[in-house]
Amino acid sequence: MKEKGCLVGTSSNPPRSPGEVIVGKWRGNRYVVNRLLGKGANGTVYLVNRQGRREKYALKIGYDMLDLQSEINVLTSLQSCRVRRDQRTRGASPMSAYFLEADDASEGGFPFYVMRYVQGTPLHYFLSRKGSSWLGLIGLQLLDRLCGLHECGFIFGDLKPENVMVSEYGIAELIDFGGAGPISRSVKQFTEWHDRGYWNAGSRIGDESYDLFAFAVLCLRLLDEAGLQNASRQLPQTRSGDDLIKLAAQLPDKKLASWLRLALKGGFSTSAEARDMWKRHVYTSRHYKPEPMATPGWLTGAFALSLCLLAFTVYWIYHF
Image 1 (cartoon, one colour):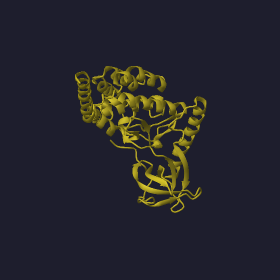
Image 2 (spheres, helix red, strand yellow; image 1 turned 180 degrees about the vertical axis):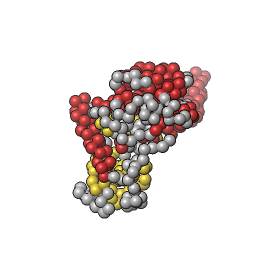
Image 3 (cartoon, helix red, strand yellow; image 1 turned 135 degrees about the horizontal axis):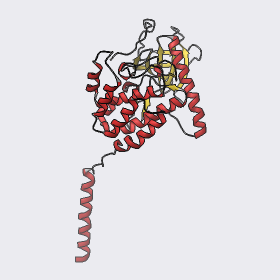
Image 4 (cartoon, helix red, strand yellow; image 1 turned 45 degrees about the horizontal axis):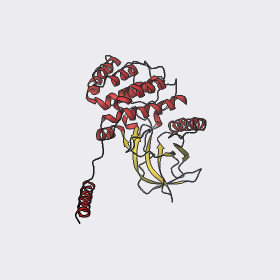
């Protein structure tokens, strides 16, 4: 796979070392670098904490000021939209406090912004450890996150397993909003396998079906990456969405296969419709059920000992 890269050089933004302090020029907040979290097409993300405080945050340094400002505009718009929705529903949205602040560094002048740190494991690693039975629950959460974005007038764009973080308890969050943008605009950042234009299955104009197509490919990649890789080896002019639909049809879970085929064809009118169908047909059949906990050995022994003591007590009472 090949990601759409950044055309701006990064020599002016050298790597930040653990312990280095980044000071905001305008707000004056001081952030201590803990470690590198990852590099994207338009920036580098570090785990940081406010100097003198224990709370952890993610700080993104941009390669290009205009690209980063565009991402900040999306996040602030999303945050305002979510806050208004939370006020109406009196609920707590994971995205409500996602974005914290933006500033320029006092030394170097590079732009950066600070966001909530999402702790967890990338989706593909999580499922490799926990098993594919978790896909029903995690998929439902991701579709709900996408619905929230779409209600606010944005698409996520670059949806792939690396951009989904899952906690130990199976709570899924979207990360890296560098590819997010307004609905009806051209998608500005994507990964080839997850892009419907790559498969000649539609345009790169951002709409709800674009994210749903990427989500369907995400599922195929998690369940049959070898098949997806083989399909991608065709000549660009011969690739088609039908190749993905054939892969979906081969999955043993027919309810999931049916949902994926519909998403790949652009058959859902809204992401809310797609989420509701996933909940009714896929989530219920793939819902994770925890295995019963084994009884500890010491508890079994203690129970046996108590039975022996009870029997001895009864014997002693009736015979003496």
